[in-house]
Length: 82
Image (cartoon, rainbow, N blue to C red; front, side):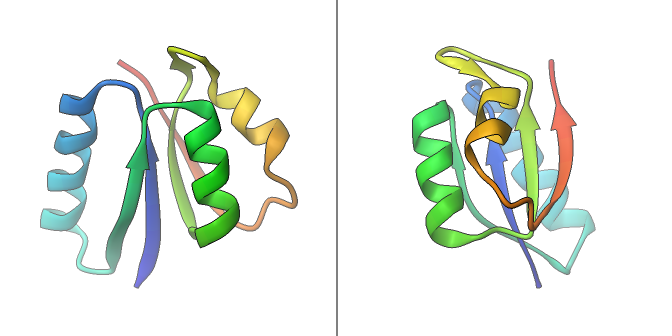
């Protein structure tokens, strides 16, 4: 299973991504989601997902802020944006 974490501050888009991923990709396991930079950084550092779906603009920063705070990069990354 590919442990996947979604970062987006729009709950309806988080839910849509969860539904689409679990419906079409049996190997994807959604381990969580977050809508803020601080929450996302803490979760990523603790749970070490293999795949990040990362919104570029968040209410408290950007996806790039998250990337600057979580090193080394041991995951695949997909940018998502509305």
